[in-house]
Length: 155
Image 1 (cartoon, one colour):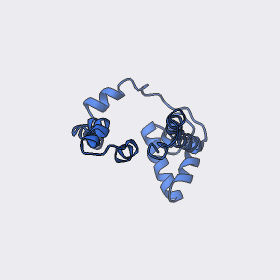
Image 2 (tube, rainbow, N blue to C red):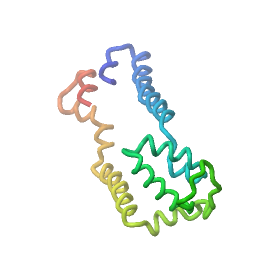
Image 3 (cartoon, rainbow, N blue to C red):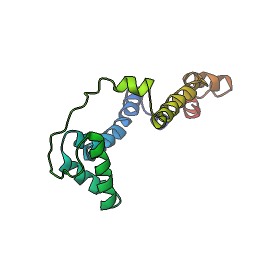
Image 4 (cartoon, rainbow, N blue to C red):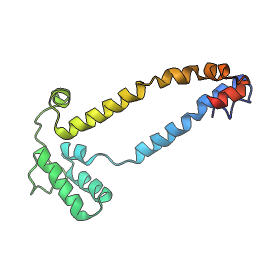
C-alpha cells in the first residue's frame, strides 16, 4: 500500500496509506458481530437453551453437540439431567484466582500453550527485525539505491 500510494501528493498519500488500514478493521468488526456467543459462557450464565442452540449450529453432529453440552454442564456444576432453557448456576468463584492458577500452577496443556505463545513473541523479537525494518531505507541507500520510490519498494 505504501508503494502504491507513493506517487500521490504527500498530503494525500499518507492519508490514504493510513485509511487503507480501516478496511480490515471493519471486516473484523462485522465478523465479530456475526459470531455466536461462547457455549461455555452461556452455560455459566445459566442459559442452557442458548448454549444448546449454538452447539447444534457449530458441531458436526447432534450427538457431538450433546456430548459437548454434557461436558460443559458437568464443569459448571449443573446436573446432567437438567434440561431447562434457563437455570440457576451455582457460583463457585468469581475468577479471583484465575491468573494465579494460570501462571503458577498451569495444567500441562495450558503450560504448553503458554510456552508456545511466550516463545513465539520472544523469538520474533530476538533477531531485532524491528531495527532492520526501521533502518532499511538507510541500509538500501548505502547499498546504492537512491531513488525514493525504489527505496520504498525495497523496504
